[in-house]
Length: 204
Image 1 (cartoon, rainbow, N blue to C red):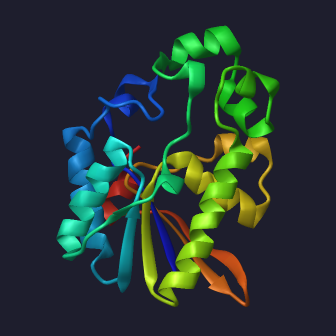
Image 2: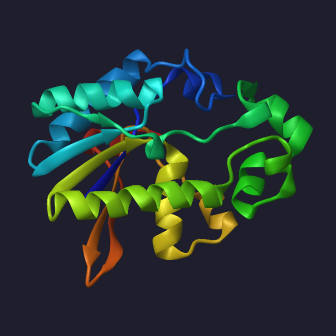
Image 3: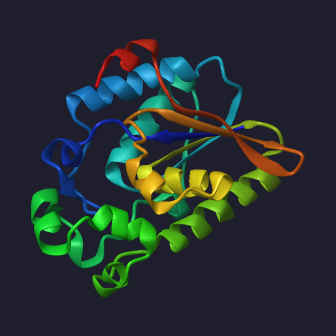
């Protein structure tokens, strides 16, 4: 099974900043607790490998989880956050005022994305599916934990479910939640979306 874990709450989530791959956006105290809690949730799984995005907030999450599980983790660039290009570091409000709903336009493949030097959604899909195939070849039937960001997870959901841009925009992958896939008869199927510790379901 492939267990995709979004990083815990980070400073950019609270400040509503399009951080991208920039440094200086670590986990908040709540994000650390979320990572600790999801690590406990993961203990019953038979995880044979942990991969992580190199971005600070994801690697912090991976480190907390891997330590709890008594494992090491491997950095893999294919799990990294979107390259935000010229929009990196921009507050959401400023971005919306200048470019409209940039998030929806991102999933639509609108020209404004490449005009601002952002990575395309198609590019994210390619690198994430490449990593899934790599893991399939090298880890057999073991459970693989992949610590990453919202859009790499959405990219695989989109590949499996053929989601429309509007559906992708409305879909929220929660901080420190698991989206799980398994391979059946040669194809990926979805096991769950936004799985997390039970008390987290009571939060917004």
